[in-house]
Length: 247
Image (cartoon, rainbow, N blue to C red):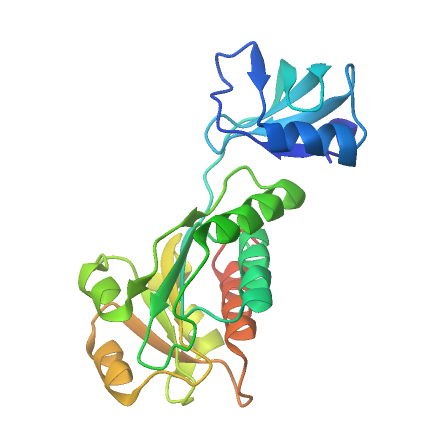
């Protein structure tokens, strides 16, 4: 952690013009009872807009804590605008997906209903909590936006025509991923989306529509059939390596 600060906390409060920050009751409990921090101890704060700040605990009790801002340690910076569109999966695996996609730099987590999606509800608060925790631990300065569960057809209807959407096609009919990511257009943009199907794969009519859309780029992830969460993380990691902020 920068400057020896091992604890990072995401807050909603503006940080650029504030002298002190009051954290939530849950965060106060976490600082006092889990981390065993008290007055005089320091940690890092970020809100996704104002960079990262060193803060010192001024007061703390069971239900509240007040932190004084000391200095900005990192300015806010631009990050790749990566949207991950995925069919919901079972609870433990969707938690894992949210955590690891956040670590990999995804900007939007967007669950969608497809013809073969088995899970019919998504706990968006839990998804957001997993994303926040992963952002705190992974040193990133932003939190992914968690969007409402929506039907795939409606997502495609509203999709920006200038944002490439990389389709992970489990039929292996798409272009090899490495070859697709070498395309000049994909390798030169920080604005991109990925769509991952459910455990049973996309229905034939869904694939037909996806393939027909000009902004969709179907790709193959190789000879092995990957689980939905594995496919999502693999394609984002590959994109970050070849076109994103890992270069």
